[in-house]
Length: 315
Image 1 (spheres, rainbow, N blue to C red):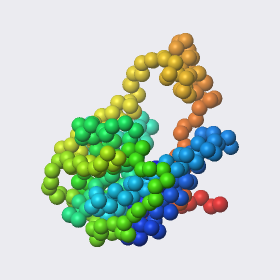
Image 2: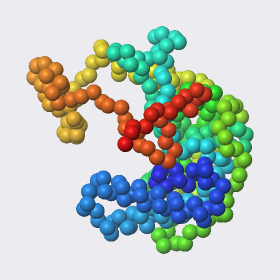
Image 3: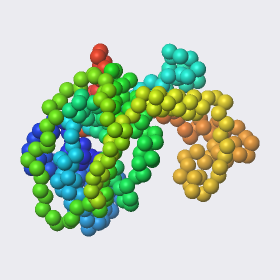
Image 4: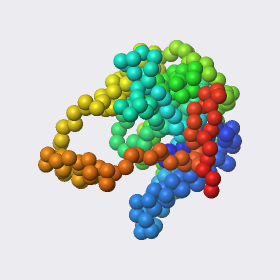
């Protein structure tokens, strides 16, 4: 669903007639669902189950496209954007956290959607597919991941302060299979297209929610103290995790050990023996994450002034 919504909100097509965009959104859904099905089952895909999933997804997207323009009071700027940010060392002001080997520790994640409203305020938007009831408002206000997005983005794109988070909740049962699609010709225009580095300081209510039985949109403004606390908490957790003095207490359990890739050295350590040889023979340092060329919304470097793209491998 995220892949389809990335096409739906793609900035370059935001002003297009929705009757043109809708087939592209459905194509993105088809590619994503078929790709996931093949990754899980290989060539043994259940064609009937796959078609039912696609029909349900298309019905959901059609219903969403009919509702979204009533609450999309913004202009999309980026979709599915990877970012990274340095983490300040709480013990040494002015420096960043590093591993015992001296490598910088960075917080990395992907923002579903970055948008700007008519007040020049920037928002990070998270899409959520809901199978039961809507998320509790208190849980949304305390959501660590999206608060961390707001804290990290101004470091990735210097000077662009984030006003708050938007939770775009979509019920999995929304839409009627077989119903014809009805779309407005165009979205409401906010008339902002570029990424201006202005702080989002527009005042307003802390939390605002609106929606239907099938969809809900919740906006939460984030304060400076809230974001500072998020950065401090993240730094404390990373400091503890990267410490050479970290004590890890075994908690063997079938549900945990069955999927753990480190059972052999764990058993060796539990027997009071040295696992160095096993680690050297069977494990390696994690390589850099592979770059997916051509992914919609993908970036591989900071967007700040003076940043340069990496060299793509020669094929």
